[in-house]
Every structure is written in structure tokens, then in C-alpha cells.
Length: 73
Image (tube, rainbow, N blue to C red):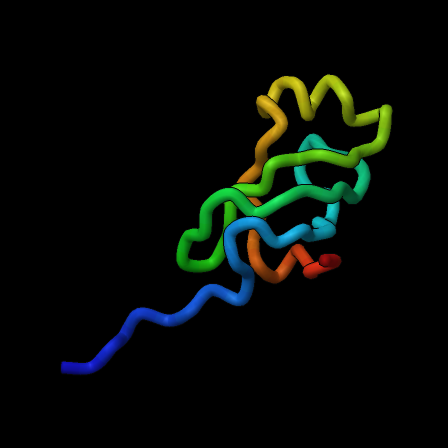
């Protein structure tokens, strides 16, 4: 039996910098909370003041594609 499950490029707890997308006008930093196949739930921790309302609307979380983030710690 083959193991077809591929390992996510990020682990839960990794600190990442994410590119802006959609309503978020600026890049932001956060922590990986859950991995999916090609994306992850990121708890948004550091963001531009301009994006404060959007971050609040998102309940300080966003689903981000692995291609739009990089590990910082």
C-alpha cells in the first residue's frame, strides 16, 4: 500500500509572512494553526493598521495558499 499523503511544507506553530490578498491590502505575519492540502489557516498577529477592520472581520484568521507564504521562524 502506497503512502500517498504528502507532507505539508509548513508545520502547525510555524511563524509565517503572508502576501496580501483580497480585502487585506498589506502583507501580514502570523502562526500556522491548521494545514490543508494546498493551504493553511493562519492566525493573523502582525498587520498594518489599515487592515485592522478586515482582520477583525476575519476573526484574526485567514486561509492562505502555501505559495503565498514564507516561514520566518
